[in-house]
Image (cartoon, rainbow, N blue to C red; front, side):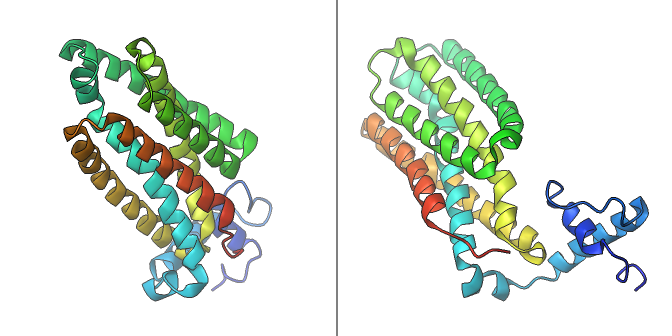
Length: 239
């Protein structure tokens, strides 16, 4: 009760989620701020699903689900099928295929690190839009590739931007929901993304069976561009 009466409690609770916007310093001690953060998280746990899926937060849910599905769909499809694509389509040896896959994933990891740096420079929303567009461009380029000489460069570029996009999505999704719904909303959106991750390899395998290699990459590009359209068009309610 005493803590609730202190100024800065709400800011301290919000600081646990959005430290770049709110600050408790000067209003609370470190111990009180920690307690306020725990209280803030406790209110989130009591949030109810009926409120999360109410009409008020419909746009936030649609946008969050779309962003997570689009970022996971192509990424997991490429990640799981890349070794097979290199062996079956481009006739690489298994050893060379695995070596290229390792190099490409290391490039993706560097892209994730660069995304962490870039997100503070340009912001979450611009990072998502720019990386989604660039990833779609490289999907189209790979789908129309005839000379395997450039395959390593283009695929590495795909992972470089795809990993950056995941950084932007992870940081942006919680901002679509109020504090009491933030964990719940983010969790449901991430779960939807996992469904996309599961369906993507199945879809890719079905098309690969009929040698529709280019079609797979065009679908991946389309999914990313759908994410861009939803991000530009949907305007969630202000929190």
